[in-house]
Image (cartoon, rainbow, N blue to C red):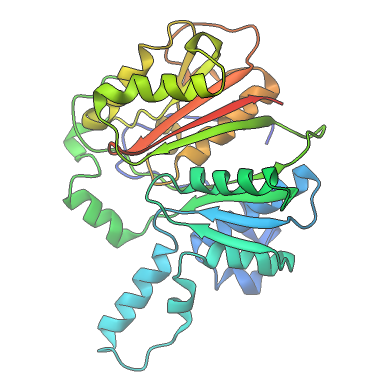
Length: 335
């Protein structure tokens, strides 16, 4: 883990970007691995890491956000339906194809009978999960909550994304993420898990201060949207040390980020989707990076847009959306 930052490499020339997977057999019994889809395997491992680092055996709630859920098993089930003329189907793929499989499998592994919930909101699923956890902690219903996000790729869905131009055409690669003139993105996948706690501990990375979500936003409302959010938290754009923007290389979608950049003349501007690809819950990756930046007080060179250096990073603002919809702002502070 300690070499994670040094090993970050931008990927600009493939249409889809696969998650770098660990050796699952070190974390999951071999008999179980066979029955798990990629998204369940990824989530099981990273949730173990998160809980171990937080020193929590059993959380008071498990909340998972996902955009397309267990799509590998959904595809297998639908293929079965077609191949067998809708007869003699095994229910396994169907049972494992539901979006809440991930949260359920984690709870089974932990024998955790607490609140278990899955949010499926295109690209703001993680932010809604955070919001739920924050409300529960503020209301005194829970003290430590496991919150995560996960999405996987499937062959058929990737083919369809290429057909409807969600994914960039071959001839438009490599992608220039910050100055793209073409539409479409490099599609990624991944899982990110966090433990939200009521109190600060010596293991705390960051403080989750506030979240704002807007399904629709006109381009000329972008700056107001951000300024209002900061004002609500008694902050101005001057108080934000770093801004992590979701530049995806899709010229139509990235205009929002360009608009947002104009507000932050004195902030370090960062981007991350050249490392993770674009996907429904890509903001999980940026949240993970932001937490590390706040804890280590250093910004990875590979993420930097402008050459503004900060002696101390106290407040980080994350701004993300997917294809111009589901705009989310997350404010993180130094723990």
